[in-house]
Image (cartoon, rainbow, N blue to C red):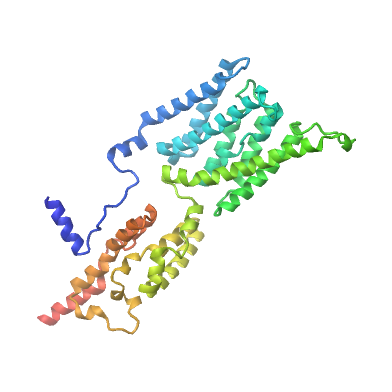
Length: 406
């Protein structure tokens, strides 16, 4: 009860936000789950069980042998993640994301190849399985969400596991998956627009088409007697190969917002979309606090240049700079950039009150950010951009008034 009344007084004085800050991990339980070794073991065991289901379902000569090899590959994958990506290994949500995406690709690959080899569908021939397998799904997703190293990690290990789904290692499937995955990762470095995902998908499709020609999945082609070829069939097969990459990239683009929300990740694509200056808060700022708006644009340019110079996320810095001073919208006339030639309202206030107004724009900014559902990183910047140092101008003014009164 007393805490509630105390918080109410702080809100009236502008020293507390009306809403509690959202936190990525909402409780001690969630924090423990994020780093728990038991959860890690459970995720890896679940993935191993999924591998067992994929390997033992269907007919293959030596499933036990292949499963043992798959487990050895899993042990290698875990060790590699632990050594080369320690930050991701410490976060169970990242481990869950990586292995869930890989398992989805493996499951879809198994399903498509089983359906095509079953002969139950007249229009799906056995050789078409290799043309419609989503080789680049996991590399694309992890490259965009977590970066190049995770994309390469997915491309390598998902290729190894995919090649074991039907028996001895399938060399054409392994090579096609590897090259398609590496192509996808190389074309999505710092991707900032969804259209570039489609472009990457097109080139992945071209790679699949060329490799399919090389391994005889497209054809047969009579190079010496072109008139003997079934060009309609070749056209369909080529369209499937190239369309494979485009469809995969389109699905990834659609899945990204869901995965970003589930795993609390913000990609450069989302940051660029958030940089739209037509956001309601920024539009209000142009009218109610034009000086603050101009100041925010200047800060955004400086922050972006500094971030590029040190290799930080420049788009994130620009977007956060746009919104860092939105709290000034509550009392814009009390900030020097919005005064123009008007009389300084602080001349009529005690220094302590002036300091409270200046400090309060941080809390008001958090209120507005929560109300408009801004990204948590933006809220953090608003909360922290003034630090905890002294409002020295009004402190000196208070000292001067005290001396004058003596």
